[in-house]
Image 1 (cartoon, rainbow, N blue to C red):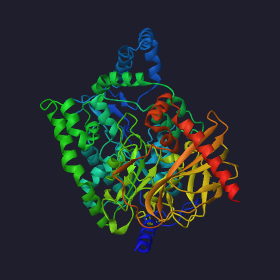
Image 2 (spheres, rainbow, N blue to C red):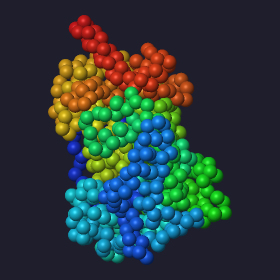
Image 3 (tube, rainbow, N blue to C red):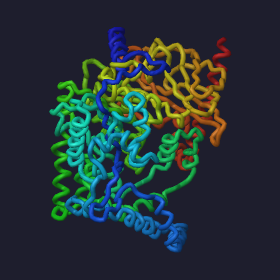
Image 4 (cartoon, rainbow, N blue to C red):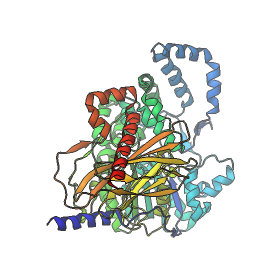
Length: 632
């Protein structure tokens, strides 16, 4: 019976990840010929006041310098007050500046616009990407230009159309505008269908469009990347006035989005920056004067937190119109997403969703996310609490025909997703940073343009679960012969890739936590993009559904010479282990297990936990290496 269960589990993970992945390139893309509509992220549309003709959004940040110069004395006083712990003056200085710069943008309590704002253009002829480039060769008025550039390699800019909306309004309003734009593109091109790639708020707009207009079957391929389908955690934090900035996460976010190979985030671990939270929370009343009545902000609040925020911030009478619109989204439209997606697929539409995991919300909400949107809101999946994972032996929510749907770090159960077979998860990817991971960027292009990528089993290069290869992460690993993120008896060696674009790295140690194996490493310097293959001694245990970790320590010639990365793996090599509980900690390492809770808290306070963990791992590796030599 145990052998039979082993075969079933290994087959399930093989089906789920679809083929053995190496570091080879993607398949060629076969463009289906349909025009592509790019539905961008939040606040991407340029708008103007129809009465004054003044630009209302698409802010001219050169004005900031003038504003500072005209109030330099006030700024000096505010900064002086901040040095003695008074955040009120600096918050007022910044807040007044925000209100001045965004004077055209507020909405009335009922959610309607105070000023008569319009998009500059809303038709296909003007929003054809090549037409925008001709009007604005300097690069202005184009949303997501790098994504468009990648798509244009296959379509040309003539076949890409840039959707714009009044992003302040609710999701249903934006979906109605998207419907009008799709009709315009179809009429302009003579095409009966379009492809759509959406980002963030654009994903919420597209999902709402599919609920309302999916029956029209106007879309061939719909790609939703990091979509805010169920909301965005930062909106709840802001509306509740309870921001607790995760400075470490913000630093990693910035490093990720800029391919920063020099690591600075560790510096923040040794500093107490709570005063930034004071400034942010003091700023919230000023910011809410601008955005507090925007329907989109309220649609961003996850449904399970919506009533709490509504009770605090909205008046039942004054805000009745806004409440009616947002209630409709939360309680009528959003609950139909799963049903609408499935119905669209049954009619032949190809819908693919991609989300990031493994980060907290930067404003403090402690949920598994891509830094801005919780993984659950993006996908409908069930997630373990932040800093915890499902216990070894965890049984997924839905059977999914015997397909294994839990990610390697055992933090996300995709069996509960809106589309379990059509949703991809990238561990460590930050929100809106898809172009900074070559695997993800390839996925976006193929999913949008190529009809063959129908689900997570269509292409072995695009398994359902993947760790990010962003340059800021330094290295990427997987076991040869196994699916990415999984390990079984087929594993004979570990592949290590230098993810950096410019820096050489020298791999100095590799350790396993939760596996009784030791690696045979000869320290080697890897050029950018180069890989190495190292063997190991010991046996993979004959058990399944157990989480393990592989840590690679490496040297770089930059501000942080010593770095490390730990990737999680699920063992799939026999019968499932018996669950020991509901959840287990993800933050525990060999060092913290030895140190105990009290000393670990002290190390966290001092900002030394990761540094000492790295040293501990290195000496563990040296001990293991000595054992290998002795056995020889």
